[in-house]
Figure 1 (cartoon, helix red, strand yellow):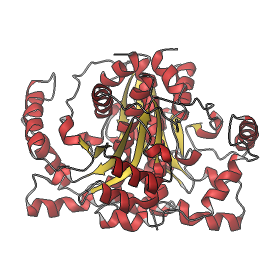
Figure 2 (figure 1 turned 90 degrees about the horizontal axis):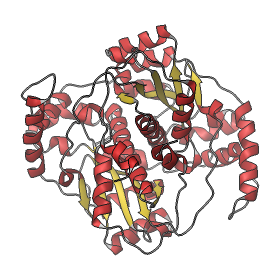
Figure 3 (figure 1 turned 60 degrees about the vertical axis):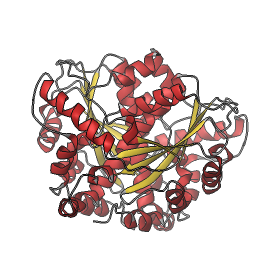
Length: 245
Length: 245
């Protein structure tokens, strides 16, 4: 096993960091790593905002409900960005671009481009001994995040990535059995690997270092999905010129 | 610089492979790497279809318009998947889950989860000396891909990833200047770094090993965006129970 695969397999989300800011060199390396990710048709349809002002970090931590969004080595917010491709367009060209910019195909493109870049950032950071956690909970109030970062039309926040020197070492969280996720040639809908996983995860939740509880994965998903969440994201992204046709 | 960062920075898309299939061990390692990626609220909202049957690879190569979709060491198709979380739900629970499964928040979640997993797969493969290329062009006829892979409701194909032993070594493709992509604390809309990049990319296109041409990045984007593309993705994803509220 090489260092890349070791780093990938050793991933765990870090939610408590020492009070050590990332150096400029570390940040540069992480951003360069992000940028080298594959990108759909060379669109590079994302931007990254590094948040250093404490009042902004506090505002974002309040949206997220998580202290580690302000207490970390650095906070990146990955954004979908189709503003950049319009900068040099004439008014007429801009109008002609809107069917693409606003369709769900390009909403997908921007989310995928941003996530590929983010995962490079995450692994680059982890390879340097830093810890990371993705922050999807910025979408608890996506409009507020948008305002805090002064994002123009055709730019929206997707998720955060906190990075820093780990101050805990949580257990590695189990994943679904391979048979539940990977199929050859056609999709298969199996209940059995989910039952196997429910047993695995029940043992994990009972025995892990903190927050012990009795639970199964399918119950956890059922509870989560039966309460409508972030239903305002749709209206917000459309107002910003995404995913509206 | 460590091996992880070296691997990340050395990325180039490979579009010509030797006729050497991946071993079962290589595939297992790549899938395990995928699965260890971060996932939003433990949803693991994706599935991966490994395509080995030649007639299916040919059908997907036809959709994509690219020979390397059939001629490679292995082909993975990453799919958004909210079917899995419904398998153990009662009819009533399923109805209660739909507002989440069908909203654009969860469309984002599944695309991001799948892309994080895919980038782990890509880097694991590259670290083993294999080459990769993402295949967004499967969305040229997303409905056909859906049929070829027999995907149920709440599962849609997002993109492919071809993997194999490289049979060429293209130049590393330049990326936008950091100043065009990374901002501190608030978004900035700059024209200058785009002009810098236009010069860089003009030189790259003139001097690279093949397909030389005169072009700039902003012109290339303008041409691409002013022709509506894949406008059928919206209707398709909604019919499959995604992104409809």
